[in-house]
Amino acid sequence: MGFDQPGGPDVLRPEELPVPQPGEGQVLIEVSHAGVNRPDVIQRQGFYPPPPGASPIPGLEVSGKVVAVGEGVAPEMLNRKVCALVSGGGYAEYCLAHSAHCLTVPRHMDMASAAAIPETLFTVWHNVFERGFAADGETLLVHGGTSGIGTMAIQLAKAFEMKVVTTAGSEEKCNAARELGADLAINYKTEDFVEKTNEFTGGKGVDVILDMVSGDYVQRNLDCLAEDGRHVTIAVLGGLKAEINMAKLMSKRQVLTGSTLRPRSDEFKALLADEIYNHAWPLFEDRTIAPVMDKTFPLAEAGAAHARMEGGDHIGKIVLEVRAAD
Image (cartoon, rainbow, N blue to C red):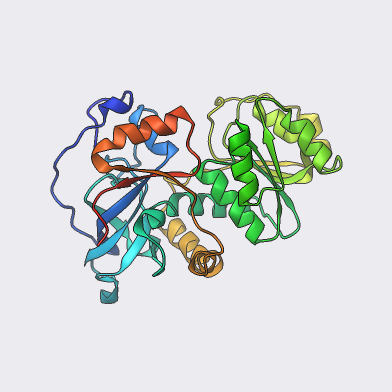
């Protein structure tokens, strides 16, 4: 599924392209399912072009079977069921991935769930635990608690014995966040998250904030971030620019940082995948953590999947079914 010109969900349409061939270090995946993510929507709107060398087809995560391997890839990768982080090309029957960016799907896990993991897992792990230096016993504030990122962040933080504060736009979504383990879920439409967060932490503030909003949320975030707290931005849904009080930031020794995953080097992603495999993947293998699934659409209905994401009613991950499971 591709598009000729940027636009609304209706610009997505089927196209036929040659099956790509794996190069050195790559595998060819016969795609079972593909995850739908906010960057896919932004790419379709014309604001997030693929990095050099990446497929122009949307889709940043897939699950499926390895059907061909390139030079330097262990032959035992053939026929392995994997999920993979990719830089593009997921909305297709076949997709290239670097072998080092693949994770073997646990036997108990269905392929739709497997496709819902890589983008959010890699993003949350890097930004909460590596950039945010989150530690046991600390408190995390994550906005959009029922998004794919939010549901993953809540579960990972609780698995590592953190307290979690989150925001959501309805009581239904707040309840869903609480069921996942959130210690405090705030309806940002009816409550002041700064006031509620400071009240919950006894005025100390949270230690780490995972922010997808930016804009005028940044100063409000800093107002409920603890001394030596870390503020990590991963999206700018509320605006590209923020005005902040630097004197307050200095007095509390707060850290502002952020990142985007897609343009990072293959080597960086391989190192990240290795760390995830050692420290986080066992939590999926023993079912401590599972992706929260919203709705699955056929690949041909990718436009409807994008419309659902833009509508904001989803709880958890939206996935495309490319082919029926074996």
